[in-house]
Image (tube, rainbow, N blue to C red; front, top):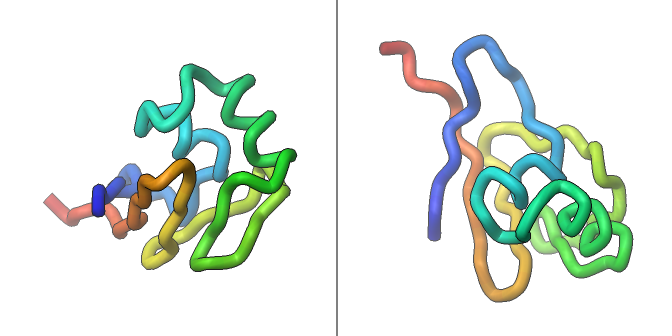
Length: 75
């Protein structure tokens, strides 16, 4: 499973941005579409809110791939 660290000072990242930055979709438009179609889950539950605030500890899954969100390091 991949991990994605939040940026220092950020408490969350919006769901569609995760799919985009992790290259799980070709871009933000496709990310928003697959979310609205019910193809993405957060912590095992289907999520259709494109701008859902995903926090450290959450696991996002799409198309056989999963990514766990982790807190920013204090370095």
